[in-house]
Length: 483
Image (tube, rainbow, N blue to C red; front, side, top):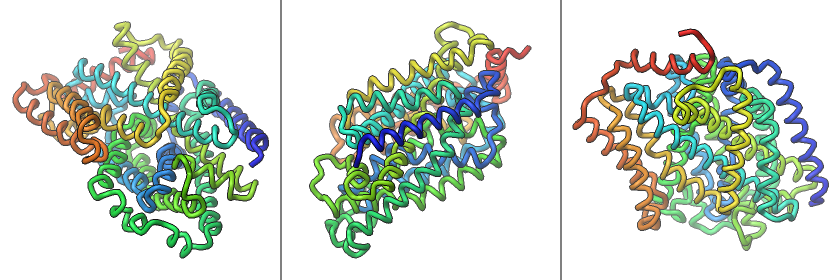
């Protein structure tokens, strides 16, 4: 492919996103406007931004590469993600009416607005947001390095700067509108690539015949192993259920009904979409089974196989998947930084008239930190799955027990967080070959520790109503509302 043609098209696309960001963000007047789009997102924007965020680096670069190596196993990422978003809508949509701003607020509410839990969770969520953001920068850098034949580290820097500009300009309003546009682009691009990959391989029968026999079994369980397949699907589901950027969709939606409608629609679309990355990966394998790096399966097809115009579209679609997810995680990280970590460090909320300015400065800081971590890694799937199990399994259990078990308390929440991280690190270092990834032991350890410690310690002192008032008073101070 003509690299200069692609870079010209990509530059024009990013300039358009920047212009769109400026246009839709003209009415940002407060911190809630910049970080939550004024809590009034209509259903179509919530669907668009949710789908775009779900079809991110893992389900594009990662899942296509996994499909290249494991055939139908490439569906596991989509299946896990669909389960996660459907359960998120079923279990957690009702928290919209409680007016939370960050996930750390929500989790601390479940245990009596405990300040220790809120601060610990805020730090973990900040780390998780940076981890996700780094994964997207890594994935986008791999794309760009292959396509433009430039140094991988330079490509990561270019990707980070590209999406940083329009997010810093427009905040969350820019994120949801650009996400919705990118969702359309990436669906068209991915489906085009899947159809043309099958055609280039000589048709469906030829595509299947070219795969190792174990890769065309149900979800490639014969290739991956049942426990490893289950672990991969579960780690993605847990990631969705505990990812701050998906919680932002709940907090910013118009009401509970619109959250459920958008999440159920998004989950159904994503489940249908889950076969597309696997087909693309298998197409790349049929055409070139000796790629040095499976993560290059997607750009290989676009650059070497597809017609020029189609190749440009699908490559931009791949980068759309990366940038849409990255922008969402950047905003989620900044919301936690200003709502929770700022008060932890300074003892007060940021001044109302400085929130937008501080948000933009914080976005630059968050993206720079994520870029630094991304420069140190080159494997998308292992990066994501290890980070989820170590940081997010405990957050998932805190949300689950807090939402459905009133006896859960602050010591139990802290025990869940510690147990998940310890179990994950033990598995990563000693038992990864058996488990595939640490999510199952991490979640089980967090559940047991949370239940046991909650039962042997005192219940929360505050009622749910009192806890909610504590958090509401803090949030109103940020918005300059008289208490």
